[in-house]
Length: 110
Image (tube, rainbow, N blue to C red; front, side):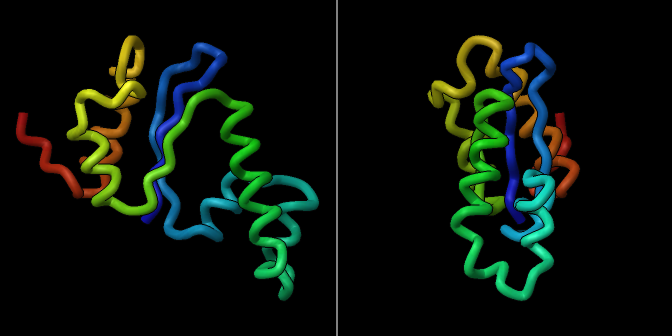
């Protein structure tokens, strides 16, 4: 499972979401012709270009972090000194916490 945390440049609240795997992540991020290529039999040949399109989409939205599995996301959550959490980044950390609870990676025992 891949977990994405976004701090939108627009000032919208930080949020976290997940994708089941790389193709699902790409489906959630790319649109138009790029998205149509995901369903093509030759999509494996285009994965590099599609990943770049997905990264560009996230970068255009604002700051973000992509965690390739639950362990990486949990380690990032526990790393308090991460500059991503500074300032208004606490909202992104809270969004990651809520996503980890929803995925039952972290217990809600406050």
